[in-house]
Image 1 (cartoon, rainbow over the protein chains, first blue to last red):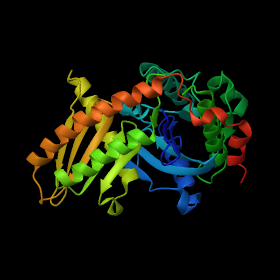
Image 2: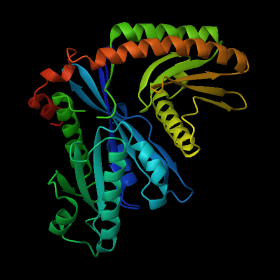
Image 3: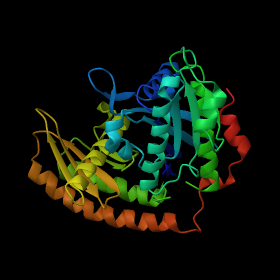
Image 4: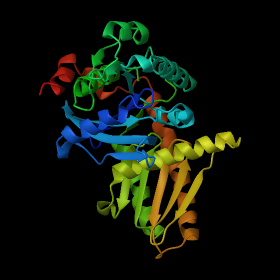
Length: 196
Length: 160
């Protein structure tokens, strides 16, 4: 649910990075944070455990520029990927305008990817959303790792709807901004159509 | 979608800002702000310069969401009020009409009793404003500024 403020001429949207544990959701946000002009970003908040696993969420406010005199602001959130934090994941999906599914390309993590994607669908449905109607992109992360599945295979398994998808190495930034731009564009296009 | 879009117009914003400004004085508090349940800041008053309001808004919304989750597990509808007591600063969080969150930050210059009393009154006023605002937003005759925006406008945002 975006928030349009006519007075301050701002449009605020919420984007959620979803995916299995250790797939690189937080790393995506950290890279964006590190590479963004200080004027365009707020403070990044990470509610993490002592071992730096996401406990509740990471949050990064980002300004992308103006469209027809309206400032566009995106609030980026990650969810905790570990299976048992499901109650927290549901909360973070509330009011979402766009979703990035970060998949882990390693063959050993295929089951975790599928499970997380199913979980995303279920949790969205509980809130009255459908993944097929939401602005949604996929990032196949960790392309630099050994033992990864070919992109075609990942696509077949995770991208039946043929949404925009990107190869990524979030730790070095490969594909990070392409993914963000793609989802932001879809969110703005959906706003234009009045579907969010 | 499950929730209507939140849109803020000048008329309602001024009314809300008036209530928030008034609450800072009436409760003798430091900062008052209103955020929506998704963590977007709607209005703020008081000594806001010392505070990262964007972060506070997001964390408060997360806090309300988590408390709402606990309420659900206990088969409560919601916990509408929260109070956190610190050594110097205290924070009073009130859910308004299950739609927005009213936050008051105060110190020892005032009392929890006074804050609660003033928050109660402000909550009633805010409820009425947000009710009418939501009706306005749901009116199909109300257009979003995005209706006129072209694909080129969106593309040009990313041409850097």
